[in-house]
Image 1 (tube, rainbow, N blue to C red):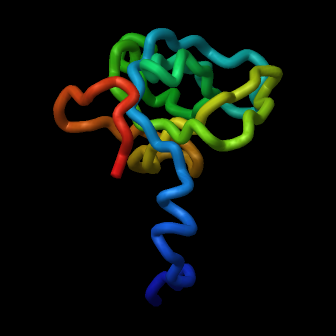
Image 2 (cartoon, helix red, strand yellow):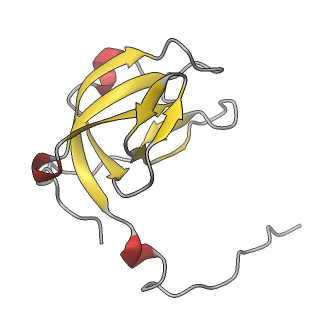
Image 3 (tube, rainbow, N blue to C red):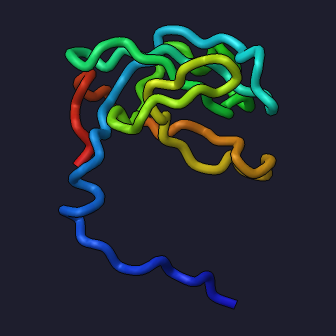
Length: 119
């Protein structure tokens, strides 16, 4: 059975409203107060500053994540997760054969300019 597709929306009313930028992970530590295993990620987005995110990317080691470039949505409302204010959404895809919600971050194939916009 085919998966139902969501309604078609305009790029201008959806995608263009998102502030999706390239950042570099500068620190990763286990998140203490979350219901499921998570990390607190600090990422440098250049002129957009250093921001924190709580994410379920724990199939990766701290060492594997540190220094990686990632994509983050910077203009979602901050959200408290496990006692930490998450200031951006780290974009990822489902980690293969992992529990629902466990992700691997989306990274560019080549080094990109920190703060660069996804388009």
